[in-house]
Image 1: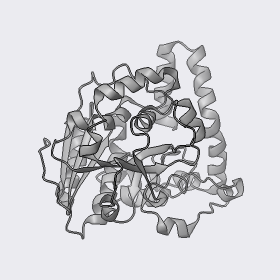
Image 2: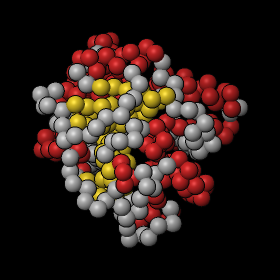
Image 3: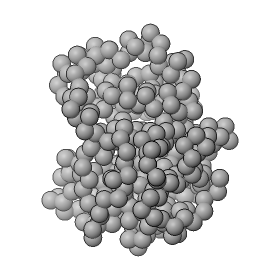
Image 4: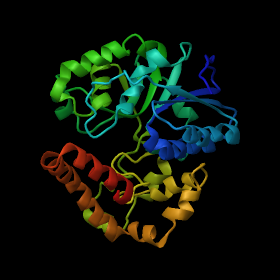
Length: 337
C-alpha cells in the first residue's frame, strides 16, 4: 500500500520503522505487539515501513497484520543512493533511514514514533505517544554513559547522550533541522569519530533539543542481563521491573538468533506466536534445543562468547580474502547465530 497524507488526530498514531530483508521477522513481531496491545482502544495506527530490499513475500506477510488488526501499513521503497557512502560499521544502511523523515514521510504529520525492529511493546503505548514534548523537538532515552560519547562527538561533556531505538518526534520542529543534506554533513564531519552511526548523527543535530523519556518506554537493561554473573546462571530477573516496562528493547542480543545471552525472550516469543511468522515458534524456538539454550548456565557461557565475537570477527576480516570472509560471515549468520 502506498503512503498517503493523513490528518493526525488524538486517536491516530503514526509509527515509522526501517529494515532490510533480514529483519522482516522481528519487524513483524514488533508491529504485532503494538497492534495487539492497542486493539481494544479507538486508535488508528499508520505504520510506515522504510526499506530498499523487502521481498514481496515479506511485504505480504507483514501487510497481513493490517487486515488482522484493522490498521494501516505503508511500505516506502528507499532509493539506494541515500547514504550510499556512509559507514555502517556493525549495522546496516537501513539504520540511517530514520533520518529521512523530511524526504520520505507524508508532509502533514504532526508526530511520529520511531521504533527499532528489535523491540516489543508489552502494554498499550498510546499514553507515551501523546506525552507533552514541550519546547523539545523529540524524546529519547538518556544513556547513563554520556561523557565519552559526547567528547567523541565534540559536544559539551556535561550534556546528555541519547539512545535512539525509540524516538518520539515532533515532525514540524524536527523538519527544521533533520534532512538528508544536514545528516550527510554531520557524517562527513565526524569521519572516524562516527561509531554509533545514525544515533551519533541525531545526538549532534539535536543537542539540547531532546527530552529524556522514562526507561520503561525503552528498556535495554532488563533484556541484557546487566546484573552479576550469578544472575545469569540462575536466570534471575527483576519481575517488578518487567511488570513496569512498556517497551522491551533487545539491543544487546536478539531472541530470534541461536545465541541469545539475554533475558525476557518469553515476552518476545509471546508476540512471535501471534505474528505471521508464528509457525517458527513450533518449528524452532519450542524445540528441546532452544529450551536448553534458554537455561541460565548456557546463557552465561554464550554471554562470554558474545563478548569475544567482535575480536574474532576483526581477526578474520584482516587475515582472510574479502570474498572468503563474506561467505564465512554469511554462513555464521544463517546457521550459527
